[in-house]
Image (cartoon, rainbow, N blue to C red):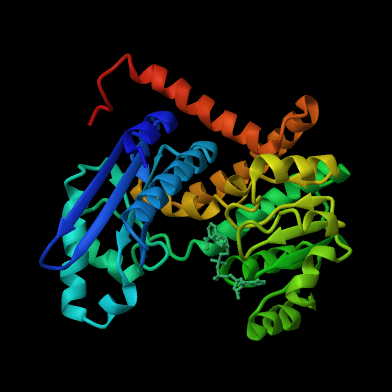
Length: 363
Ligand code: NAD
């Protein structure tokens, strides 16, 4: 990979490598964009096949965070760290574990606030507690903003309301049928919200306990994992895996709306976004629909401190932003994800211009 070429093409600011011989830490931080504020993004600990794969993951995920925070209206940029290794091996060695994460924290402290980290795949809240012993540039700590999943689910719920308003002309979910795929942290809370609003649920998961819980608590009807795409429903809500909107599933869909919590729902955004549009199915941009969690955690680094009231206000804005995007798509014929990307880029460009008139934020 031509790293400078890639960084130039996609507007990356910085790519940092860090190693600590005594703990075996090997970390890479990609800072995509800090125009709107410090780059926020989790630290992913993964047994990457090689360095190249790790760099590509860091770059791809960091850029995604820029768009997510920009569209959600947050004063934050996009970044991501990846750590190469096996988290299970480290967890078996508590002494080394503390040193490992503190070494990572010291390295982040050296980035001087340009990047704020959080928990991600392969890392835990306890790991972040060790990171916090060396730097304040970490969010998602115990006793602060808490589990992001209910907030992510609330953002998805608000997005579904925006889609229903757009398609049916009313926000009323009574009797609307929602097919929910994945009943984990996000899916469960989404079902709770939908049930409370009078929607009917058709659900699936690969875990029987998760299915039993929503069947018992919310009167949901369970179907086999592969059948979720073809059920008679108004909305398909993917809350398990990415890329479930693809060549195989699109012809099966009977819904009018696709809106869920999963990341990268469209296997190929240009191809499958267009295929949904051609079938008259409304697609709620995933990175806006599932921004509730990042909104919640971001308030830990807010200068006025964490405020659930502010978080809920920002999550409510997801609804209206989604509604605007759907209306622009209808008027222009553009795909919803293209409009979302453009709005995010426009916000960054507007703020980039005002930044040139002063040297930085006053303390
Ligand atoms: P989770 O692991 O708690 O839940 C995922 C659920 O999907 C599990 O119950 C799992 O059994 C089920 N599942 C896996 N494969 C399946 C399949 N083939 N068919 C049906 N069910 C299947 O994860 P989560 O935190 O609820 O996140 C769900 C999705 O939302 C993920 O794609 C995640 O990246 C995304 N997301 C989550 C958050 C958050 O705050 N948790 C924020 C943004 C995006």
